[in-house]
Image 1 (spheres, rainbow, N blue to C red):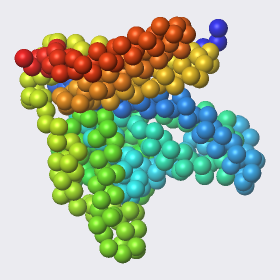
Image 2: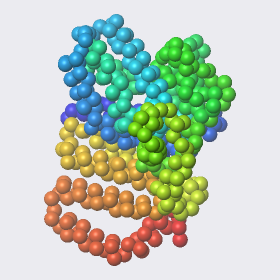
Image 3: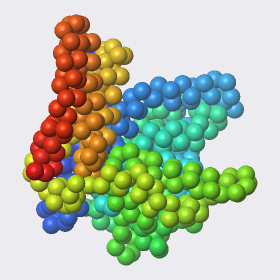
Amino acid sequence: MEINWLAFAVPFFLLLMGLEYLVSRWQRKDYFTFSSSVANLNVGIIERLLDSFTVGAFYFVYDSLHRHYALFDIQPGLWTWIVLFLATDFVWYWYHRLAHEINLFWAAHIVHHQSDEFNYTVSARITVFQAILRTGFWSVLPIVGFPAEMITSLLLLHGLYPFFIHTRTIGKLGWLEYVLVTPSHHRVHHASNPAYLDKNYGDVLIIWDKLFGTFIEEDEEPVYGLTKPLNSHSFLWQHFHFLLELLVSVRQTPGFRAKLRLLFGRPYAVDPAWRERLEEQFLWADAPTRSHTSTASNHRFRGYVIGQMVLTLALLFGLLLYEQHIPAVYQWLAAGFILLTVVNMGAVLEQRQWVLYLEIARVGVLWMTLYALSGYKLLIVLAYIGSLSLWAYFATVKRHYYQLIYGIK
């Protein structure tokens, strides 16, 4: 049976995350927190899941542009591979820089900078919106004349490097600091210190930052995260909070030209007061049942979240490994279950009251999958009886669920 060997990237990177955790403990450093690490991995899980559905579309874009609009017919060779690498890294620099300087792009990229910790789990904070945005920038490469096969192959290798620079366990690397983007350089990029803002955009080579005046060395200890911390582990809020802030700000801005200037202006042009107003409306309306700290330290709570994470990662790995042999209907059902579980984990970390509805939805997806696999009509009857029973005893189920998960009596 033919399998997708790229699926093994999931356990490979998880292994490296585990090794980094052990090294940090050996160094007696507190580089990991439970809730933040789970939230980071949640973002990465969905990116990897959606990437399995979109990677073919990205290849189609590159191939179509090359066949219809290529200026030159570039063939694979040692020097053309080198030129493609330099061009890819150069385009990345400008994509990354503009993603920090233009609000519309920052709305897609901000998720990568929300974590107030800095370790390998942070490298997983890539969204499908960011992947689409990058594809738009890299689309210049097939127009120049690079074939889609070369571009996708190089992007696969080029995308591996950034993972290794998201760490605090590695210090400065001597002469490599003059050529490559090192962990020290990237720690600066993820810092919210005023001196470090909008610096070190490079992906593999640091020469672009030095050339265009955006380079700074790591001097003072970085403080990680956004200049206005998000203070939320909600998967949905992390993805959409700035987009909502931007849309509300644009709506409140008079004049078409002023609206465009805000959309394509810098993030500081968005009134930070909108964050608090939107949080009151969407995030804190369903207040947590108890403090995050006390619940996150509860062994039963942690066990539940870890169990969800293990289940999700195992399902994702199996889906990626055998994607060519799994019918589309089961792929979509599995994807729906994974998405609901990730949103569920974020809601559990936030101790949201509405998390029970996500649990019911997940059971519904599992039941539909079981019916699709077996075809037993009895399952429809049992689902109907179960729904009536849940409706009749919902208050009791809700009370026992919160007691089980959050320890509420």
